[in-house]
Amino acid sequence: MLARLRSLALRDLEAIVVLSETRHFGRAAARLDITQPALSALVRRVETALGRRLFDRSSRHCTLTPEGVTAVETIDHVLRGLHALEAGPPAPGVLAGAVRIGMIPTLGPYYVPFFLPALVRAFPDARFQFSEALTDELIALLRARRVDAALLALPTHAADLAEFPLFEEELALALPRTHPVAAQAGRLAYADVPRDDLILLGPGHCLRTQTMELCGRAGTGAAPVHATGLEVLRYMVSAGVGCAVMPALAINGDRSFRDLVRYRRFRTPVPTRTIALAAPRTAAGLHVAQLLAGLLQSLEVPSTVVDGTMGEPMAERRRAGAKRPGGAAKR
Image (tube, rainbow, N blue to C red; front, side, top):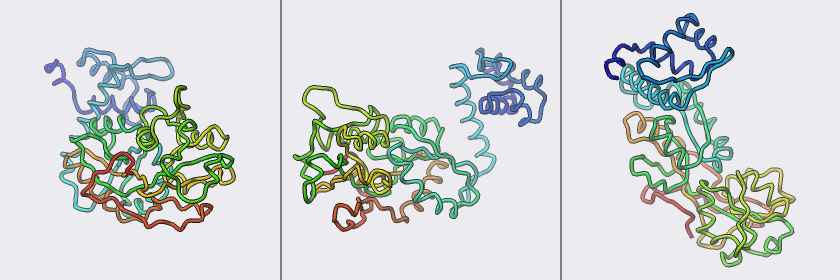
């Protein structure tokens, strides 16, 4: 196969990546500034060299085959490495071009509004692309260089990744307003959590694991209710289905359920999760991560629950220390 691969040019590989992005021969040919017959010839040359079909073609569009998905990931990784080699080492303090940031779903929608304006101002030459995925998938994407950095909760148990702790985010219990526990005064004792009423996120969510470590397994026989996402979970709480552990940023961003959901803070030691930025331990990965982490660590984030309806003052904001990598809910 190596002999066949030597016959390929970078232009051939670039054509495969562009076609995988557009899924359309006409649009891909226009981007490459070549004719459609020429693009078809390039694709056939690459498929012949690799000994596998990369695309399923139709008269209107094309789709990647399973073998094509793997091949395009490898080709894209090779091309990015060559472009980085051509560009030389990045200038200190400079972030430019496409920057792909992944994040866990229980964090992204509530955290991005706090840091995105500052990020755009600090790095005007960068183009930021955000995506959501569960922790295990984010780690796989980092290892495959499909994202440049990821925002997630520690621990990741991934020694090959660099991790930069950003802040500690408080966890509290969301209950229907009519639930007996919601009417209790003061902070909530762990023993008072109504475990039979707990709603959990689906498997793969780190907050699911943290909830089970904090409150114990839900129920005493029947399978617990699962929610596919944090907002679905909040809707279920507001409908009186049960209660759920929620992070502070999501609680402070609640503007729709104040009359239906009550949030109870836990007694000391207050449970938190450590939010961090993770990146590959490569020169390029560390360059991006250090710049992003430096900015994110400088921002004030309302990481403690500040719901005024609880009659409690806002707790002092705490930042994650580099000495502790963090992890599951701390009690």
